Image (cartoon, rainbow, N blue to C red; front, side, top):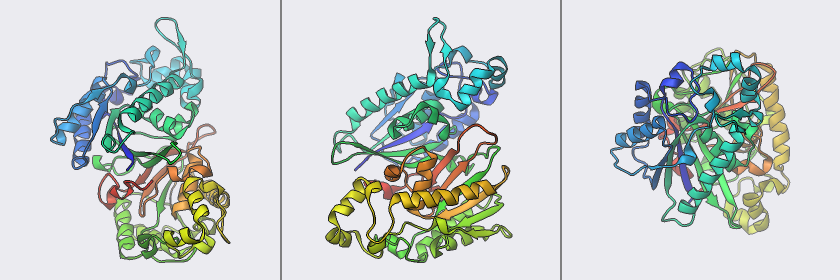
Length: 445
């Protein structure tokens, strides 16, 4: 069983409302809405057993943790840890974001577009780089967390972390092996819930899976607010009989089963309030059926078939159960689980093939959109994973790092302007399918 980590950002604070820099100064308090968000997170996680609860000692996070546990009806102890403190922006603390941009235009630009390069001067005259130091802080916390909860099943379970925007993103970046300048690839909203699974591999290496990122449906908002650039909603098709049976289906055109149609209907209800200008689908039946059910509430939106988004060609494995593949290709199957980027499917594709064509199709879709537009894209497990790995700065070797559940919804926002990088605003949202936590993921990295 993996160690599951549930990340909750503190509720909306007084400084959030005023658009002030708060950093690690404890001048900001939970707002009334922030208290409501904390309680909503507790209600959403009410039935989830927790092995331990850790929180930043800053009051906006500490109070979020207390309200969250109270909503669960729990008197569980909270461990306050200084390594969950927010980024140190003390020279800017209390200033409005607009004031920072006016008074420190070059440093404000670095903060937005090259955070690894930002250097500030502390009250003691020390020059320091806030985000590289925060990444080191995040690694210290991860090391201790794994010492306490990563050794055996009795201490694993599910651990709740309640903290702040930048430190939560840095925790994820450290687990993914990414750099300080990747900070802007991820979005973590106030009161949001994100879930990661951690497991030691057979060789002792740490396997990390992002199960979901920045879920806010429990707050009544559904999806994060759209930015100024293009938005794409990437959806995995609903379940098929072969998904349920555990067969490798690849490019065999298996349709949705009854549960898959129900998942597509649930995704349709979840996305009903979204305004789409365009929609795209793999040319196969299961994503097309899913897309058509979602678009039933959006008459007039054109649906374009994109052959580049078809599922990976598993070749001779298609139609086979895992145990059947293990009989004929035991080493190749082991390599697929351990080092998928090294595997050439017998008479099929490899991940680089899928990576190249999926990204070519994806980039053509992005280029066709105006900044004001939102598009629906429905595709497959391996295709979605390769796209997301590329957007997160990962490689084909990392496809097991991102989960894509049948009917899950991912939100990608593009910057408006020459600088910046695509933002994964939410990943694998499945609340509309029944619950904040995808319990089918336990033990299945």
